[in-house]
Length: 471
Image (cartoon, rainbow, N blue to C red; front, side, top):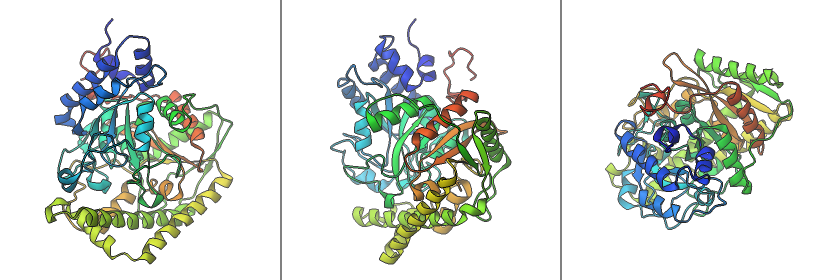
């Protein structure tokens, strides 16, 4: 029987690569399915900022038989690691005008390509990643595949939407304050933020963000995430190991004062904690106050680095007044006023957060939290055409109070889907551990996935001919 679109949409990357190896489908056919689906969904989804199918065709010609992901289509976030032959626009008019195609892949894209992935498009991001919504004024507007009236998250919103809508099983993503994990939670996919320094940001180092930023992927399944992690780190794909019983701290309330966590998100985390306890792990309640100072340090560092990055971009690119969004100009102006002392304070805040979490994980192995405090708002609510930077940046803590701590401390963290809210939008939990403990997080995530499987493609985006699918 011919390999059809519903087979493609329901498969993860390892399944697709296996189908290519067995001769059930060709890499060219998979690329054609991904490209056709991306173009067809683009008007109502907006996940793609740039198409480059000819580069995908060229990549297929370089595939080898020993590649574990040979022939699997991939989309690349339009911010962070460059993709050879494509410019980086970063959601900005000034880069649409001035950016030249990259001469070479970034380190992570090169490693993914060496594993057999076939990059063919770049995904929608907010301008320079400075929003929780992937709705740049340049367009396109990226919508949530589960609830198109709502946002897909930022700044890897296009990547998360592409995975959740079945365009690709894997998408490149970056994370400086939650930008892998926030869209993963909003779109019901898996998002791992690696430990600080685990993956090179070279050779151009365009995504350092004061050491808070890192890059990896968004996936449809935990087993894909584990296999890609093994490949990127060690050129092998063994998957997550078995676990001894772990001591898991459970934090259901936000450490920040005045930030409430909605009942549905607390319930998702409590349910996940109960599942992990049934798997033999030991639970410990964590008081929000114990991490309040560390979260404040994370917010301070993120704000300083975000403003300095915007100022550096404005200085380098010399944009016309209408070539940056108003909120980006506000960040750039503040960043230009920051002193060397302020930059040093950000570095000290990062060091303090790292020290707190190092001590925290002396007594516990893992921290479990809700992934978000509430569902992300409707399209257009997180506007960037104003200049109140404090209100804009405050939203990061109010929607994702548990995110930036992992960036500041350098700890790895993974977001895993876990249930749905009353409007059938995904819920998710976050698992965080000490630096270097990605294997433990992946094994825990696989335990949650096995006990509580999730619908891996938004039901409204399943092909009409898929057995058992709903329109």
